[in-house]
Length: 225
Image (cartoon, rainbow, N blue to C red):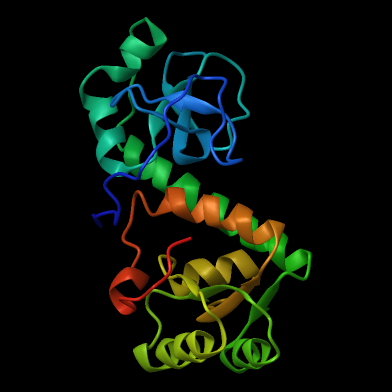
């Protein structure tokens, strides 16, 4: 089990109808009681047979219970009765709920990358990414967690030499990135700056509540999105 990189982030107080920095409504975490941006949380609903079900896209019908999007908090929700209190009834918490949430958040990240590819918003391949950087194409670097150190360093430091800020996402394996783009493996990529990059950043931020963000160790001067 990998340890997520973040414990907590600075938050803005507010009510359920408030918004924070354009990131959507604020909800109260059923475990910590913090009021957090909805984009920093995971919504849960009940299935017809009273099973707690993650709703990572916040679209399923019914009453929702919101929990901060990190492994430790959802583990506490599952083991300390937070879902029963939130739904105000006895519920069934499935085994492996936290891993299920991580899998769904990974699929969400892959879906966003797939949409970016269809929209022409992604560049793939070592040479292609380097050429794009030299041609002043700015965005978020994708580096496979199992990629070679030498290659990712060359891409990163090229970007660092050309731009004042550089963001890297490195929590997905080459196979996971490949699945997003219909390939066997992807090592290097670049999500072009724009609306899709913002959507990707929010999806990726939730995923790294459940697995390590290795870029923070690869590059100590890594800019945080």
